[in-house]
Image (cartoon, rainbow over all chains, first blue to last red; front, side):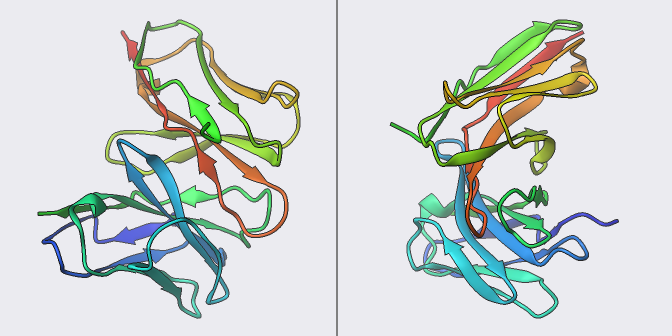
Length: 114
Length: 112
């Protein structure tokens, strides 16, 4: 069974640009969560989608947004990029995202802002 | 006070040693607990998952949860160089869609 797939693996952007990251969950998983990982803050929750609806959101500015498609694939978008957005962005999937279901992570997209 | 505290290490041990990794938390709503292992340039890999207080064993790994003390541990027996990685604790609360809260991770090196 294929794991969570994230594309691209690496991205370099400049300040002010926008970026879109993609995540394909494990087959049969309908919940997709996004996390930002930095050396200073560790892993921080961005948002979670289930059946194309955002069900939960972390404390990030509105520049961070996402969506989920009918096949459960998800994208996240960051607009007006800032230097502080440089991070590893991780996607995790679970069957339904309900309490107690373990989340499985992809290998992330490493975003560097110049 | 942060919701989850984890000693960042780094922790360096000889091969074969018993390793103890720990996290404390402040939110009583946390009901289930996970340990993830993250190798360099890879995503976190789920190692252990527990719901209640007590011990759970899987091979060389034992997860321990003490809800009364708000303290969780991961023990690695007979540690191997391949165990060298960053270990992250994560916690979730009851009731709805998932939002895990992570510790910052402990970097472990097992020396041959």
